[in-house]
Length: 123
Image 1 (cartoon, rainbow, N blue to C red):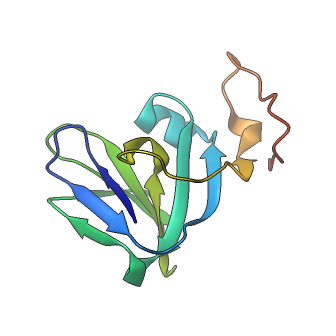
Image 2 (cartoon, one colour; image 1 turned 90 degrees about the vertical axis):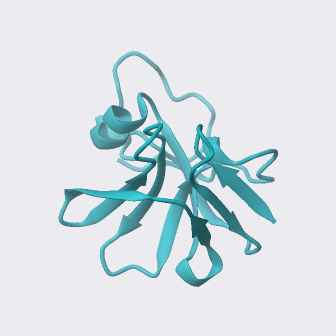
Protein backbone atom coordinates (compact mmCIF):
# COMPACT_ATOMS: atom_id res chain seq x y z
CA UNK A 1 0.00 0.00 0.00
CA UNK A 2 1.29 3.42 -0.96
CA UNK A 3 -0.08 6.33 1.03
CA UNK A 4 0.60 10.03 0.67
CA UNK A 5 -0.57 13.46 1.69
CA UNK A 6 -0.12 17.15 1.12
CA UNK A 7 1.99 19.28 3.46
CA UNK A 8 -0.91 20.35 5.68
CA UNK A 9 -2.59 16.92 5.66
CA UNK A 10 -5.95 18.11 4.30
CA UNK A 11 -5.56 15.84 1.25
CA UNK A 12 -4.62 12.19 1.49
CA UNK A 13 -4.31 9.52 -1.15
CA UNK A 14 -3.60 5.81 -1.27
CA UNK A 15 -3.34 2.90 -3.66
CA UNK A 16 -2.85 -0.81 -3.25
CA UNK A 17 -2.01 -1.13 -6.96
CA UNK A 18 1.54 -1.18 -8.30
CA UNK A 19 2.13 2.26 -9.89
CA UNK A 20 3.49 2.47 -13.42
CA UNK A 21 5.56 4.96 -15.37
CA UNK A 22 7.61 6.51 -12.58
CA UNK A 23 9.09 9.57 -14.26
CA UNK A 24 10.60 12.96 -13.70
CA UNK A 25 8.95 15.74 -15.68
CA UNK A 26 11.05 18.71 -16.78
CA UNK A 27 8.33 20.66 -18.64
CA UNK A 28 8.00 24.37 -17.92
CA UNK A 29 4.53 23.92 -16.37
CA UNK A 30 5.68 21.30 -13.85
CA UNK A 31 8.75 23.40 -13.05
CA UNK A 32 6.62 26.48 -12.43
CA UNK A 33 4.02 24.65 -10.36
CA UNK A 34 6.38 22.52 -8.27
CA UNK A 35 9.42 24.79 -8.15
CA UNK A 36 11.57 22.12 -9.82
CA UNK A 37 11.39 18.73 -11.42
CA UNK A 38 8.13 16.86 -10.73
CA UNK A 39 8.53 13.15 -9.97
CA UNK A 40 5.39 11.06 -10.34
CA UNK A 41 3.94 7.63 -10.99
CA UNK A 42 0.50 6.69 -12.24
CA UNK A 43 -2.26 4.28 -11.34
CA UNK A 44 -5.66 3.59 -12.79
CA UNK A 45 -8.32 5.94 -11.43
CA UNK A 46 -10.26 3.05 -9.90
CA UNK A 47 -7.16 2.10 -7.87
CA UNK A 48 -6.53 5.56 -6.40
CA UNK A 49 -8.42 6.76 -3.34
CA UNK A 50 -8.24 10.52 -2.78
CA UNK A 51 -9.77 12.25 0.23
CA UNK A 52 -9.87 15.97 0.82
CA UNK A 53 -10.61 19.18 -1.08
CA UNK A 54 -8.51 18.83 -4.26
CA UNK A 55 -8.47 21.98 -6.38
CA UNK A 56 -8.18 21.09 -10.10
CA UNK A 57 -6.56 23.52 -12.55
CA UNK A 58 -6.42 23.13 -16.34
CA UNK A 59 -3.15 24.69 -17.49
CA UNK A 60 -3.90 23.34 -20.99
CA UNK A 61 -6.91 21.64 -22.60
CA UNK A 62 -4.95 18.35 -22.55
CA UNK A 63 -4.67 17.90 -18.78
CA UNK A 64 -5.56 19.11 -15.32
CA UNK A 65 -3.46 19.35 -12.19
CA UNK A 66 -4.67 18.76 -8.66
CA UNK A 67 -3.36 20.65 -5.68
CA UNK A 68 -4.29 21.47 -2.11
CA UNK A 69 -6.17 24.78 -1.79
CA UNK A 70 -4.75 25.30 1.72
CA UNK A 71 -1.01 24.53 1.47
CA UNK A 72 -0.61 24.63 -2.32
CA UNK A 73 1.01 21.21 -2.78
CA UNK A 74 0.90 20.00 -6.41
CA UNK A 75 -0.22 16.39 -5.97
CA UNK A 76 -1.93 15.05 -9.12
CA UNK A 77 -1.83 15.20 -12.92
CA UNK A 78 -4.67 13.84 -15.05
CA UNK A 79 -4.64 13.70 -18.86
CA UNK A 80 -7.96 14.47 -20.54
CA UNK A 81 -9.77 11.25 -21.46
CA UNK A 82 -7.23 9.04 -19.68
CA UNK A 83 -8.22 6.44 -17.08
CA UNK A 84 -5.08 7.00 -14.99
CA UNK A 85 -3.92 9.70 -12.60
CA UNK A 86 -0.33 10.52 -11.76
CA UNK A 87 0.55 11.33 -8.17
CA UNK A 88 3.56 13.17 -6.77
CA UNK A 89 6.23 10.80 -5.52
CA UNK A 90 7.47 13.54 -3.20
CA UNK A 91 4.11 13.44 -1.39
CA UNK A 92 4.35 9.72 -0.57
CA UNK A 93 4.54 9.04 3.16
CA UNK A 94 7.48 6.66 3.61
CA UNK A 95 9.14 4.62 0.90
CA UNK A 96 7.41 4.33 -2.48
CA UNK A 97 9.40 1.26 -3.51
CA UNK A 98 9.77 2.62 -7.07
CA UNK A 99 12.60 3.69 -9.34
CA UNK A 100 12.46 6.42 -11.95
CA UNK A 101 11.97 4.82 -15.38
CA UNK A 102 12.37 7.92 -17.56
CA UNK A 103 12.79 11.68 -17.76
CA UNK A 104 10.12 13.43 -19.84
CA UNK A 105 9.99 16.82 -21.61
CA UNK A 106 13.75 17.13 -21.28
CA UNK A 107 13.88 19.67 -24.12
CA UNK A 108 12.13 22.08 -21.72
CA UNK A 109 14.39 21.45 -18.72
CA UNK A 110 15.96 24.29 -16.83
CA UNK A 111 19.46 25.35 -17.79
CA UNK A 112 20.64 25.23 -14.17
CA UNK A 113 21.05 21.43 -13.91
CA UNK A 114 22.18 18.39 -15.87
CA UNK A 115 20.48 15.02 -16.15
CA UNK A 116 23.28 12.53 -15.55
CA UNK A 117 21.66 9.45 -14.00
CA UNK A 118 21.61 7.27 -17.14
CA UNK A 119 17.81 6.91 -17.11
CA UNK A 120 16.18 7.22 -20.59
CA UNK A 121 15.20 10.74 -21.65
CA UNK A 122 12.31 11.84 -23.87
CA UNK A 123 12.31 15.30 -25.45
